[in-house]
Length: 292
Length: 335
Image 1 (cartoon, each protein chain N blue to C red):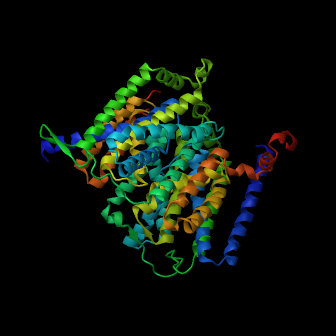
Image 2 (cartoon, rainbow over the protein chains, first blue to last red; image 1 turned 60 degrees about the vertical axis):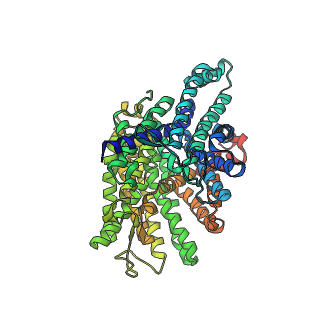
Image 3 (cartoon, each protein chain N blue to C red; image 1 turned 90 degrees about the vertical axis):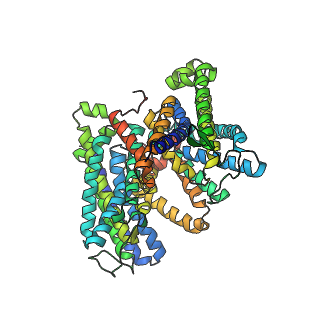
């Protein structure tokens, strides 16, 4: 193994890691806002990928252009999921934790079933998109263009999210609600509205990730399941609720995955991620950047 | 102890004996192999969920990684039998002991974790187990292990020609899991577990050994689940990592308890009696086309029940529960 191949795989690990961060950040945002883990997060990614695929097939809109449309559609979807399901789940008086887990889990199963029903279990892919299959050479390292653009989108999205949370009224309302949901009601902020918009924003972010992923990854009803666990690990690694923990968590997961793939057989590459997660939480039970 | 509680426990035991006796006679009337198969699966999942409920329901440590113990039970039995000719009965016991030990070894670091960090740790550990078995050539790797059929035999626990012995074993397993729960409910452990679930800090300050009570719950729970896994291997004759250690098994173990009533004595069995036949029937009647209708029905049911009855369906079976449904505004009157 030469130094070049090591740098090569770490570089692609970093790009993938930034994408993992983008996939996971919506989960972290929602958790930070209302202590709810969305167990249908992977399925949100799945429908975003299908949306991108169908916009490409039926309207010939390249994934790069359809990304904002998909994000907008997912925003609406996320808000609707909050209003129809999660709003009631958080009100449960008995077994609140269980109800949250299983109501969103039920949603995940329904979404997977619907995808199988309407889209069939076939593997699909976006062929001949602008970026698909292209690579670029930077200082002797070959980088796949879709992942590179995806990583740039992720960085831009994190930057925008940072400005959004800190500079806008809604962002401040979001912060205030996560600090103390009861008190914000006293100053006239509608808690439900903030939660619904938070779910919309979280879903829009995973929608953006889905649009980019659709360029280079197969699309099938169970695709979300393979990324969901990575997203949970990413969020937990960074510390639940910490938006920028998700960013850091994503980068770590990407690099660890690339390193494991160099050392162990490819089928074991996820073991490295899981082992690092366990190691981190055994030492710091609140993740890297989570608050006590 | 107050007499009302003792009374209730005596009544529970009586009801269980009567139900088990009735269940034991059912195969005398129901000869259809398809239905018998569903009954075996229902009892098995009921038993598994009952065992899961000990750690996750009573002790409040939500595990979505119990597929690990299920798989360990299945693999221990199958490997000992195919590689060394050890009878499945010993394999079963061995699988149970191994699983209990591993549960405690894993519990040692994991029980420091709280909430979602703990849940994700359980998922991740089971995934690691799955991946390791996937790559373990001696244990069949991804190809799995086929258990050679040697004809009907209680000694080898194989019955290619009849479902009945499986039915009676599954019934016995369900009874054991129920009885263990019933017995522990009123033991020192049962009280510790409920205290740990409700408020670990307060429990600790009152002298409850929080850590050891979690370890005890994990060991009992893993042991029983592994016995279920061993049984499953003997029942289906073929195992591979996905078919005994996949995440869906962890979920399937949790669901009956959640639907029936988590942390209750009857919840898991009730949940299994409703959920398993429903799953099997939707799968064979509408899911045959492979188009996901079974998933839609199944997922929809989970959403509906978890939102409509967060405490599980079990409450409906008490007089108060039924009265509450039919006359929600006159609760005072029935009291």
